[in-house]
Amino acid sequence: MIERRTVGWWYWLATLVLLAASFLVWYQAIYLAIILCVVQIVHFAMREISFQAFPVQLRIAYFMFLICGLWGPLRFIHALQILGTAGVILTGYCFLARALALLPWNRKEPLTGAFVKRTIFSMPVEGSILDGPKESPGGE
Image (tube, rainbow, N blue to C red; front, side, top):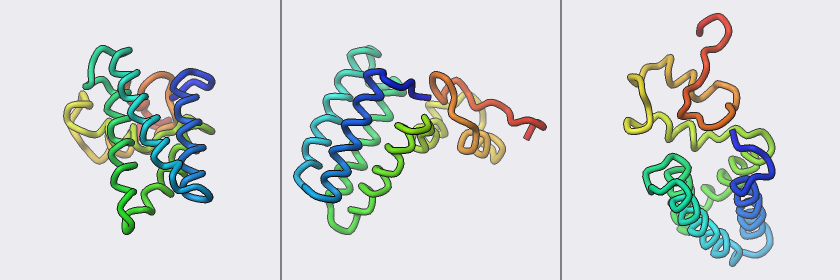
């Protein structure tokens, strides 16, 4: 879960504002969002001392979706990013982080239906989703 008012939270808020501006009123703001995303990647790679660190993977994936959304038929991706980033800002839930947590190099247990369900549907967690989604009450 992203803690509010951290550097990461402010990065996501600024990205959300730029992305929304590009979608609604000033298309060129998308290029500022892309530049800000690159700055985030470099900042978190330096902080984590690795491009393989989960926060860096998350930002690289987000950047790749920004680039894909530049192509006209895929512009809807930016709308999905607006919704997802707003969700991160407001609730701390990040679907992209959960999807990345399912990749083989990010998980510590076999990919099962129960694991996918726990990962996707668990409440936002303190720290990283890689710390593992918690079992829901009743052991489901």
